[in-house]
Image (cartoon, rainbow over all chains, first blue to last red; front, side, top):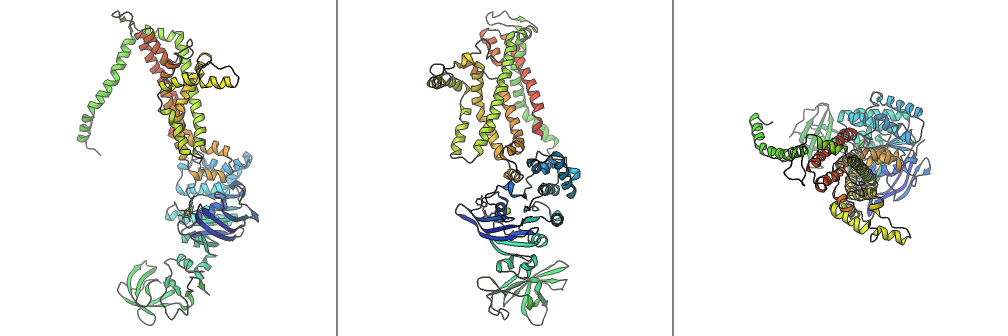
Length: 333
Length: 290
Ligand SMILES: Nc1ncnc2c1ncn2[C@@H]1O[C@H](COP(=O)(O)OP(=O)(O)OP(=O)(O)O)[C@@H](O)[C@H]1O
Ligand SMILES: [Mg+2]
């Protein structure tokens, strides 16, 4: 069991309000990712759930019980820190066993659980090493082992993969996801990497300056962004935002078209423009097109079209995939 | 990479300094060794003659030597224990966000800047004096008999004074080490359910192992040669109760005017210090590699 609910959770450091008021419902067993730009309050929110940071006001419920006055150890959560925070003078075994030892479990049971956790994480042959004798990925796995061995109600991850290189990150991403599916334990995962968010999450929380902009599945966020912020944040390259009035606006203040939802041709109808730069990736081509009508537009086409700098092109948006936003930036549905 | 030529030139340029340092060190040492092999008493000038190892024999078989050796160990050991234990406690306290922390820190460091002679005088005359001292006043106002520290517990009094001088040093080193402890590690322990005592035992103390080693090594070097405090307060007495090796050598040389035996004692002290350092480095120094 591990459902987590935030009710009007507010956080201020002195006069500086970091979280103006968050409401969130996390279901038991789901994988929720907090994503947002640096400094938007992801870590703060996570630490409040963990109990490492006091809540200024509001309630945090775990399985229906308000835990704001419960110390971290008794909330039944475990956390994987960005710096791993392994205990440097303890062996891998000691690190993983520490929580169980503090809980006063008998030795044989501790050993059994540590061995099981190590087996899941491929750490069995490293159990007697010290953290400094491990690679980054192995350290990361020890940190995860320390979290899973206590069989918590939920895992909290704070950018756990940001210290790893790109290839290892992809591998660990899959391992973490697989592990979470296998254990069916609620997980909250903080990242500013939207690829991580899109690939790992059951549901994503998009944060902006401490406010929750949207809470939904990755595809919901991609297909139906609730507002301009989410529309611009999810998807790479960024969605094209067109503010100058076109026949597509139909009363909207801004329309958005994703680069992959445009078709490009040398002639025909559509917005006309000139290619300012072209990036040929082989599988895709990114075109940066200057148009007199609607400004600078990014287009992503599959394959190689043989277009280059200076070519004049016509752009046609897919009419079913145009996002419309009103003056306040909220999506019009 | 320096070329061969540059390296040779470098050595050449350095050699005057090295030679000076070497002479600086070797001349007194050679003279001490030389004197230690002479019958050399200042009361009989011009009567020096070769004595072989007699001076060593006299120094080492002198019952005062064993007493001084024991006193040295007691003094060094006690001061180390007191400064490390209280150093850790005070450092933990100063690491807390208490009111006026900076002022308190400055005050804690204070004693380190006071000359041993001065602090010993202050302790002797203002604090521990059986008639006019602060402790005596406290004892009398509580209706107790004041303690004559230097007569009744002379070694304890010396240990107290020396510890007071070295506590700031230990505290300072341990405090800086505490501040370098990763906050996330403490939080991880907190999430793992460690109470403050367990956090201290399993996280903080292992983190402090290395600085504690440094404190012990450095303090030992200086504590082996404590002299001013003893000279000013007890003069090594009563009897031999507070005579350590350094003071014994002094009394040989300047109270008995026996330069030969004093030199032999000096060399014995060097050997003792080296043996002690060797074992300390072996025992605690292993921490340094970790
Ligand atoms: N102890 C603190 N005192 C004052 N302000 C703080 C404190 N901790 C965080 N903040 C502020 O709160 C805001 C949110 O910080 P937080 O660490 O939650 O950001 P984040 O979303 O995790 O960013 P990042 O992606 O860089 O880790 C920042 O503006 C930060 O300056
Ligand atoms: Mg953060």
